[in-house]
Every structure is written in C-alpha cells, then in structure tokens.
Image (tube, rainbow, N blue to C red):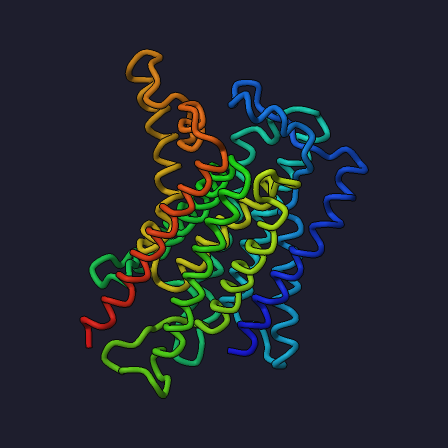
Length: 356
C-alpha cells in the first residue's frame, strides 16, 4: 500500500509543479493551440494557449512508477510495464499529431489513416505481449476471454481474435478520451475519477487475489499483478488531478493529443489486465456517450442527406451551442462521470458480495 500512495503523491506533485515550467517553455517558443474555424466561437479566445501538456502527465507517471518501486525496492511487474508502455507509446503518437499542428500552424495534425495505423500497430503489439510473461501460476497479463466483472467463461476467444479485440479496445478508448478532451478540464477531471476508481478495483482484487491470505478461494480474482496495476492507476489519477490545477477553466495549458491518447491507452490496458473490459463501458460511461454522439452525428448526416442530429459533435459542443457556459457543461459532465463511476464500482462490489 505504501508504494501505491507514493506513486499517487509523486505523480500529483509532478504535474502540479512541472506544468508551471512547461507552460513557460511552450509560451516562450510559441507552441500554442490552433482552434477549428467551425468550432464554437467562444473557443477562439483560446488560440495560442500552450498545448502538448500531456508530456508532463507522461513524465510524472513514469517518474512516479519508478520512485514508488525504488522506495519499497521491488521490481516492476509485467502488467505494470505493459500498461506504462501502451500509455507512453500512444502518447508519442499524440505528440507527433500535436507537433504537426504546431509546426504547420493548423488545427489538423496527422492524417487520419496515419494516426489510426500507428495506434493499431501499437495496440496489436501490446495485445501480443499481453499474452506472454506467465507468472508462477501460469497467469498472463491478459486472458483470451472477454470480461465484464471477471472473465466470462462462455466468451473464450482464439488467441488471434483476442489480440484483435484488445487492439480494438486500445484504439477505441484512446480515441474516446481524445474526443472528450474538448473543454477546459473536462477530460482531465473525468480521467482522474475513472483512474481513482480503478485504483480501488485493483486494491480490492489484490486483497482478494487467488492465493492471497484474505481471499475467498471460491470467488477470488485471477489477475496478474493487481498491486502494481493499482500503483499505475493511482499514479494516473494523481497526475490528472495535479494537471487539473492548470487545465481547469480558463486553461493555462491543454493536454493535447499527447495526453488524451496516452490516457485512453492506459485505461484500455488496465481494463484488459484487470479482467473488467466491459465494466469500463460503465465506469467510463461519459467517454462512451461522447463517442456515441460523434458516431450518431456522422451516421445521421449520411443517411439523412446532410441533416444534423446535434448542433455540433462531440456532445459537449452541442450544449455550448445551446448557450450553456463552458464551465457549466464541464461541471455537469463531471457529475455524470461521477455517477457512472459510482455505478461501476457498485456493480463490481455487488458481484463479489452476491457471490459469497
């Protein structure tokens, strides 16, 4: 437990203090955000706000992970390194996208096909590696079963299908968080809540891990390295919480695709390795709703001959167009996120209680 608390504290302090220097560095070099011309008119005042703040989140989480293991002098685990690896690699894709926007002075970065290809390749490599590194009991970081609150016995997949499924989750969640990152503090605050929730899930799984002294053998969790996954989750939550100090409205810095793609990848990795892939749809319900608003908008536009279902997508911008203040949209969406997180944690705990 000590290492988990250390990781959360180091990551929080990292983003809280390092972001200040990142803002000064980015402003000095003119690395500011370019705003879509078709976006809400109120966002035009944000033009030039420093972006790529996700770099600080990534550095803080990596530092927190290293320090936490040094403090208790334990080796990193396969699950922890895989989660950190996917988090970092997708962050590099986001960095390339942000850098192209800045260097070419436009609101578009990587071409969609290039961005999706890079995400897909990284996700497939992660999926393949997640089936390696069995522990002494033969448990690998990922399993071949689709999971909800634990592996579903009737949803066992061939390994190559399971890799594709994991790759779909990684690309899907990274893009879902990316779509949510449209208002000051919205994605940052939501991610802080979601990763804090997963910290609790992982701690519970560690306490009730198969073979643990406090576990109920008939209903234990067969998860590899739940303690290290809790450490990663709290580091991510702490980093987001600290970054929110600077990212809350009016934002002094944006996380950019560097932050949103990395955080979405981390969420996918943790959901896969905690055997809670479908539970993430509930815990991360806000991300799902916002992503679905884009899918519905595009689909309706095509089948209706150019009509729009929402005034603007993603959904948060629809409410801005209705006249809601940005901070009002953000706070209300945070409330919705909190409700989904509570429902997800409630479902997780209820399943364990009922199973006793």
